[in-house]
Amino acid sequence: MSYFRPSIDTLRAYEPGEQPSPDSSIIKLNTNENPYPPSAKALATLRDIEPDSLRRYPHPFAEEFRQSAAKVLGINPDWIVVGNGSDDLLAMLFRSICGAKRPVTFPVPTYSLYRTLAQMQDVPTVEVPFDDTFTLPVNGLATAAAALTIVASPNSPSGNRISTTDLYNLATRTPGVLVIDEAYVEFASGDALDLTSRCKNIIVLRTLSKSHSLAGLRLGFAVAPPSLVRGLVKVKDSYNVDAISARVGAVAIRDQNHTRETTKRICSSRERLAKALEAIRWRVWPSEANFLLVQPPSGNARAVYEGLKAHGILVRYFNEPTLTHQLRITIGTDEQNEKLLKALEHLNR
Ligand SMILES: *Cc1c(COP(=O)(O)O)cnc(C)c1O
Image (cartoon, rainbow, N blue to C red; front, top):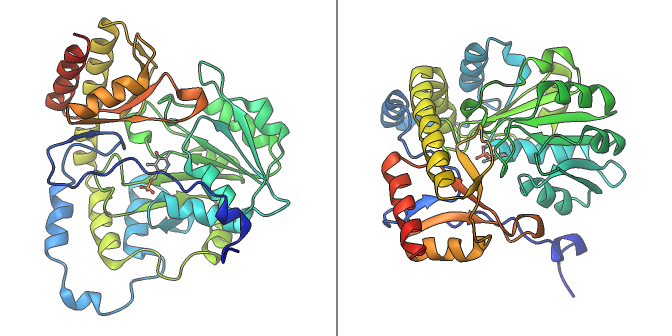
């Protein structure tokens, strides 16, 4: 006898990457966090928060952040919903759009939380495999005719950006909503934000977790036409974004120079690390994100993962049938990436 719904009893809970204690000396290249500090202006704002401002409930729509994000993107604030990380927005999308007869579809492999959210709510799921080049399977996804289609671009763990033409074609062919999860877009050569004004069924998700070095703040947002925004807001927790996050996040997103500088630095490190791995005969998939999908020459990804862990370096190994030979490595500082290469040399002896 269980107190839970059957689907919760059988649910394999989402497995976040390992999180060692912050003061440990482990080099964390497993969950795509940014190795550089957040905006100094945002941190100054954090230090100056008036204790008395916390006595009251925060604004239900995180208005200060919403206004700042709208200004930075050059759109109207009523096109934005703010969430407690983009994970919160994904949960809101499932709650408001999916149901027992309203399926979700997404290409795989991708961010595994999509599958977990579907299972939590008994939502029928059509997983459409990517091919070896991670080109969007537009046909398969459109044929699913799902209420909700989710595409991460750049995708994780593959790192490639999805063609805007493919996204547009998919949006015109699906009867439901197309969500484009742009968690890594600041590391890419372009984005799909424009599509939100061309198609009435597109929602773009953004987060401050990766490019703004604020994964601990929990702040993300959705950009969508106001009609979709109104539906999403109905299933939101009343105060889903706390006053501190809204305040600090507003300053962080306005500090575009800081974001540009750190993301640029990470992109150059990414190209250097890719070349260095290719030089030792690793397969490296082309990436427009702050991580690389790679395959060691031995194909024994698990052994390399364990060997690196013994050297105090965490990378991501996916215990999944289609990814048994691959690892996902977050781009660290150049110093961290050097240590990674040194450790790999050591493992090969
Ligand atoms: C990291 C990540 C997220 C989660 O972002 P949060 O804002 O931290 O919840 C969403 N989608 C993808 C594809 C991610 O990699």
